[in-house]
Length: 595
Image 1: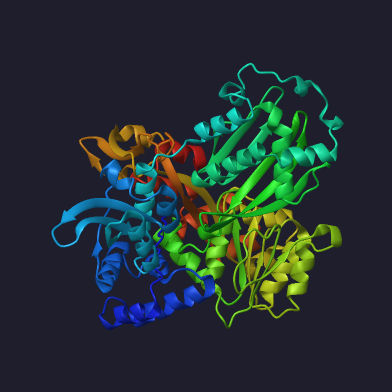
Image 2 (image 1 turned 90 degrees about the horizontal axis):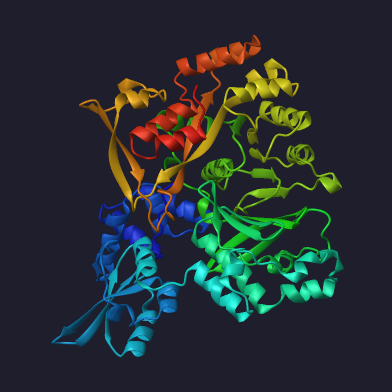
């Protein structure tokens, strides 16, 4: 999914100036300002996300208004080490800036050119001038280009090197960290013999704190969605889920296992003495001025406690629907049903398929001052401004059904139910839809038509389904090809036909079809993939579909009618992305089933 990040705050007066000069329409500015009030984001980023302005034209305009040059930082450009050395790494990272040139000018003497993402931060220029004793010339560049250049030019200690340094301070070695034939005598002792004082003390030791911080910061830098810390008989493993795939990482030696778990429990306010039952908690932390939340799950296993931390980054939510990966015809149906006055819209797919992103993005569009939106979730992973969110608590009787029942007395316009798990919940949701409410929820099925069969198995009568359902969306996430190492290659058209790709969709030249793949580089950790995009199977419940539901037609007939009315299944969406160079054939096969 595309991301834009423009650090410049872009005051409203500059927005008005853009309207006055014809760069932006007043309606577009008003809509962006309304989004800013809801989300608190930067106006420049919102304008780009909305598609009102391209990032480069916006930056050129801003540079012109600030009286400085706009520069584009090429990934292949090399900056001399003596230039980079003028500004410390921590300053560069904190303020998102980069020294790019040293020049000896007749008028000002030696000047240092600094690329910045926010030229309005004039205080830092004074600090740099005092620090270096040089005249400073600022130029404007895109934040993401500066960040990439910082990663390239400032030598960073790798996670392996950082772990090695921590282990040296404890008298351990990298061999132990890799689990190479190292057996600690303490491993043979039962962990049950440790008392709460020793557990707490070990969790507060400096090397242990450094290890946990290193694991978390490495995961966030790698844009991992989950962190797995797993116990085994002679070692422990650390794996990050990156773009949906688990990637092994360097791990501390086995003897640090209990201390690491204790440290994570302390951070999540969990009971460090309880090691027999699962525990769930939450950690909030700030890294480089950005706030993150970690949802912590601890599970007792044979060889110790396994820890899984889900990284929750709210910046991934409220994404422009155009950037999620919808095909144009599917997006048109989604927008129509999303803005209906009442009815049920269901999002289906397995865990980690992006359902939350789609739901929250839709709710952020519908979230207006005159609309009352309420959600019941388990858990509430992200807190949204202007939306009433309720956390499920089954221990005190606050289930999805109980929360939904209470919502109907709270005068809501739009209701979001985190998941439909039982008959009572779906019955109340249908009742809400039939009494004038717009309902969003999720259901676990393999495809969109399968949701109708699933509701029938739960005991819902056909006339209730046909009168309340507006749309069912099945979705998956496929990995996108890394832009840094992307290359094109050719294959025989007959080879693609074997995977069900129709010939009429191919652009064939001399019997060959051009595809794309990633060679593997540092940016994608050698996988050839970076980032993910959605596949969306959108079933609109039209009158013909309603008739089939009423007749209790088999799922095959419903699928046939859905295709007739233009529904693209998941494989068809993946085929489009393969042929357009967005992903690979291998990824299409991994994520979607042939149908």
